[in-house]
Length: 126
Image (cartoon, rainbow, N blue to C red; front, top):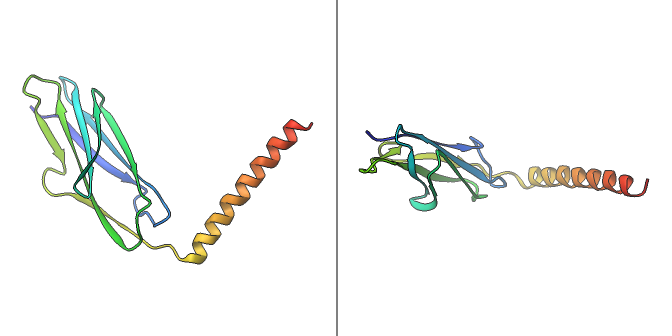
């Protein structure tokens, strides 16, 4: 019997400044021999002898749609294979973040890094 396999992506609704994590979970009574992750019909990662596998892609261009799917083979002599979805692909749409929103996001990140550096310097010079 073929293994169970499921793939998902996060964040659910990414924008063009975000990376996307693809996570696969698989299980079978004989164990999992191999998991493969595909995005846009290109093999991105192969994981062996594990029940979970992930790959990070992007950031992707805004206003674009991307597809993905995964396959898993069990550890039996037949190496039964299953994919998610069973046919076709899953997909997600990448929104384009406005330039002003991007600048705001970057400023928040800069402020956080500055705060962390100030805390480190305080500890060093106390």
